[in-house]
Length: 107
Image 1: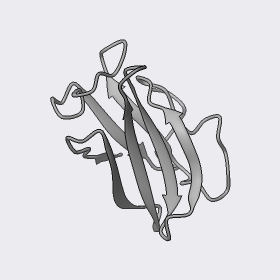
Image 2 (image 1 turned 135 degrees about the vertical axis):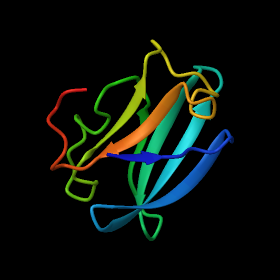
Image 3 (image 1 turned 45 degrees about the vertical axis):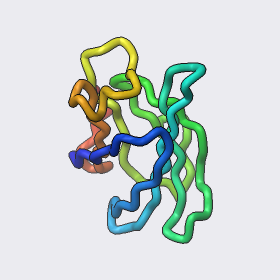
Image 4 (image 1 turned 90 degrees about the horizontal axis):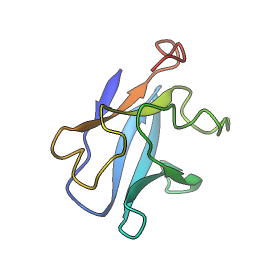
């Protein structure tokens, strides 16, 4: 499991390597709806998928199996019922990537 550290901003892109492939992850805070979304791009900033709502303790890619996506799963680990704007900064929530060989479907 790899924890991906988010920064204190409403909209930002992080570069990361997952399963030996480079990706850019875009995180956006929706102030009106009070939720985060995730977008995934390849290393050349070509969009693979956009606007996945970050929800607690659920495999975020489960419904989006596209060959160009990372093979594992992203999960927002928290004991809260919802993820607030500052939860990743305050360590109330953690954004993790679980490689395919470690993911058994249980959260």
